[in-house]
Image 1 (cartoon, helix red, strand yellow):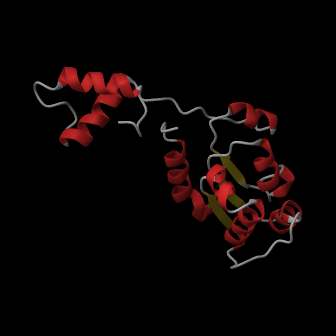
Image 2 (cartoon, rainbow, N blue to C red):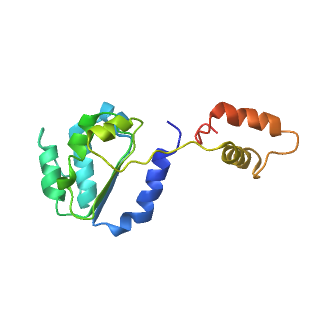
Length: 169
């Protein structure tokens, strides 16, 4: 973690959500499932995408109901931090779950999970290069684009230790 997948997904959501009939950003799926359960996440996704409050889903019917209610809707769905194939299958089954022009964005650390679900268009977020990382660190530490005089070596060591991860910087 810490490379910026969620941040990028949030920016995309804020930038293009107005182009869709229904939108929902399901934040931190992995953690949310520990505390809320799948039916609760399915209810949130469906309620959010349809802009209706408190849609209740009977146990075990979530996937069917999502498909039936959203299949004609041009929707933007973002599933953040998915870590199991079953989560994808129950929250965003297949292409036929969503109407024409819909987009489903999934953030995960496990590319194999995306491949297993048949997702062909994948984008790998790369870490910052040394110059970008040094600039980000300097902006946060000194409010300048470069390290203050006498701090270049120390800043370079910190940036190297962080391995290009923006969150670590």
